[in-house]
Length: 440
Image: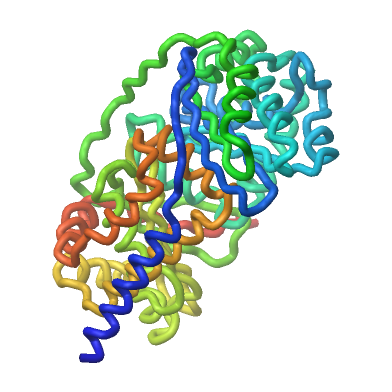
């Protein structure tokens, strides 16, 4: 009876969350191909304007890597009507904040303003799309900014190159084998004409989605959007035809060295489906089961009980075309990396061969419910989700429906997907080691 009451309570909670978190929106497309999504929420006097461009590191010339991330910085330099170096000043002086980020698949820009500055947010993004000034002085300035970011986040950061070293072994053909930040030598060698051509190709209305979320009047917003964006010329259609990867059929053993660490790590990585595939959701659940928090299987076993690992975790690194599933551990004392790898494989093998318990299954569902609530708890988060679901998944309605897909996954499906993708002969095992010091 107690279990039935718990399950009934969980069901009621899920239903309540689903109703409370329903995100209302309207979407349409301008004649130039710019897709527009509006989410009105008048509970707080703030508004987010954002633009996501369908361009990331995978779209770059392999001899000119780093362009997409570079443009994340470059398109804050200035425009025909925004003086060079004044973008941030304009935003902050009007009570706003702004930022941008880049992945292998997309680039996202956004501003958050008091709601009476919606027009300013839309004007700024239309300026970025229509009137960017791409000149050598700006390229030189941002080249130094990117180099410093790379030194800080990659070159001098402990474990900063582990993703890079995983990718080069998981991907041999697809451009995911590169890094988002790219190679500095490629940026140094690039001409101004190459930067201008990249902008002309990708930063166009038919390769973008504009989202307005927050406190605004819909009719007024639509008129502003039409005034600022409708006359921006459409770009040429972008055709993507990336090479497919061959299956991994034998374990790949590799080593990498990092001068910024003292404690080594072992990493097991698998190539997985892109995030539009239902199986990517299942792998996300497996990651939650194995390593999300102190109560997860790997943490309880290897950190708490057996005292073998200083840290253990799993990363479902999902992308548009393929994903990566990475499990890692850092040893304690004299524990060897091979021993940690064997212990992690033992827990992964259990997911391949046995059904997880009903109790553990419910814990996963509860965590996913909580993550869903948090992702839609602010207009800024909602704007990002709306842009992502439209641009990368091709289905804006997933902002309300994806949680139902998670709920529909069964314990049997978890076992089936683990057995399909998480086999020893389909993985990379990377020893991530402190850089060897030369001996005198």
